[in-house]
Image 1 (cartoon, rainbow, N blue to C red):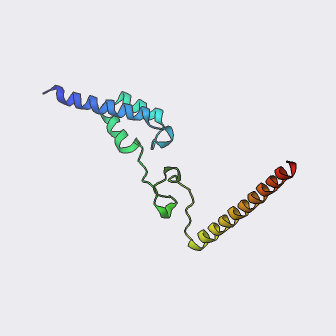
Image 2 (image 1 turned 135 degrees about the vertical axis):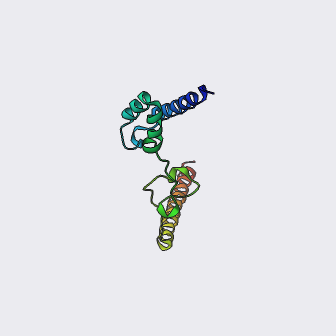
Image 3 (image 1 turned 90 degrees about the vertical axis):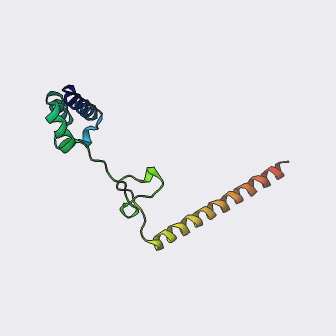
Length: 123
């Protein structure tokens, strides 16, 4: 029974030590990662509790559609990603894309017909 508190502190210390080591440098709060490592390493109980309260990285919540994320596509869920909010601009953009695609299709067909004519004249 005397061993149990030391074992719990040891497990907490080990957990926090691993978490400090595996955390990204830019996500650690309040102090540099190296300082947190030293604090947790040399002060097992107090350092571990301090790490959990003040240093541990906070997990960011996923963005909503209004904040710029497109749900269902992880590559679009990063901060700062533009998400259109004006349906008229969306329609205008799609209309231009369709017109451009149609123009490319017409050019391709004309090029293919020219090549066929040249082949027939060459025979």
